[in-house]
Image (cartoon, rainbow, N blue to C red; front, side, top):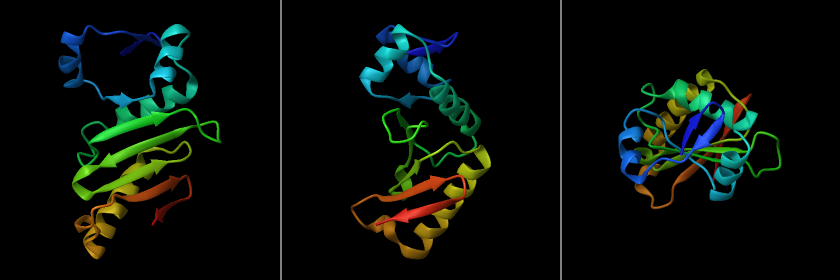
Length: 136
């Protein structure tokens, strides 16, 4: 899908890889994509898109972005995967680009200090407006 005028437009399968090279890709559950294709893109997803677009090209450690609107808060849950660090940052509430950059820097430093990238299980961090929490 491609977002156009606040609606999702289905792409032809042959066009997907070309678009992925020039725009940020955000994975969402199929049911959520269907709802947005039927009605329109909601404000929470627009915020996620703006945040993801602002990160484009600036934080190359982020290899995948996932978003799920089903959460106990109005924002939903955004997951930034940092494959090279074997880590995930779960964005739990609306934040700005500076908080994401700071979180990535802290995760990078934490990984250097602990050598946790050697473990088989990904390390998870929860990002809130006021701080970053490492989960075990």
